[in-house]
Length: 451
Image (cartoon, rainbow, N blue to C red):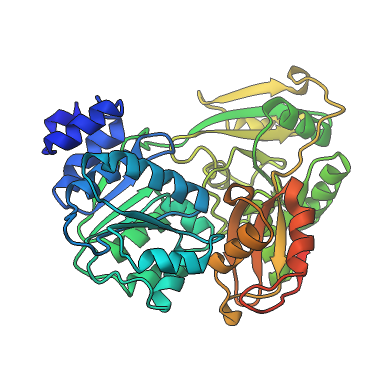
């Protein structure tokens, strides 16, 4: 399907053609007709799928250029993404003169932004924290807004922007079009959609979720720890939950893995709540690749993308087995479920035999001696949270502005009542910790340390 099939102006078609936009991508073909009909849309779309053009063409087509008021707000999780989106919108906007697109993100001069806002704009592209700051200072007026776009909504939720987004919504007319684009499509995203959208049409252009695609392998072994390390070396999973049947085994196995240069943490019933939070936050934000858990401790643990599940101990019953391995292979991705057993457990292992299960010997794996598993991020803890009125945007602004990190160097941000956790790329953690210790966030100094 080509763009000329849509109800677009000749000038828009001509400009799109000049930009090399002839045939629509899947997300554009599925969402653009709905956007042009002024419907609310919730779309699952990965980076590089053409989603910016999908919502960009739609919002620019409905723009009243003669009305010099903010008619569209595009919220993005990072300054870098906001910059990309603004550049692409400006390219698409060439079909019409005098369309003003303004970027409002942290790390930029607030005074300079005030000056730009004094002359108004048609479209604002920004990060939630900075947009909210302008709204609170009454330097930004969204009372004429017609379209709200949340780009990479799942990333914004991961970074802890939900409160900022909800605060921004208080300044926006209820009668509007709301477009929500997300790389994942889970219950949290659907709940947000129900809150902020009306009769939203769902659009999915990725693989439809039927059931988890899971490779299931059982290894007979004489040394579970060595076999586990060899499995990690063979598959190189991004993140793994290893299940044991007792909390003592969980603690001991995590310690043994660390001794084998595999970064691991244990979660079990003996942990205090704050210790449990520390462990779960680090695993969820990719500051620790291996979590060793008991079934009880893993209840309520929801990790969107899990590469592998390992049954270090065979579970007590098929229902527990199904529940354990069902944590991997979600959202169309292929997961791996490994189960280890010793020769005396052969009869018990045979109970899990099916067409989907492959039984192997430990000799099928190469022996590894120099393999290591290190985390992508390290977690920075800030001794301040919701009770201190600390928001994700404040932390992101301090790290990208004062400390000098890029948004791409910062992962998930979790804010609790009294503490905030920030995932920082491992190679930047020392500098980030050092710099943040000597700086203020929201005019206040907080204790900072890394886990």
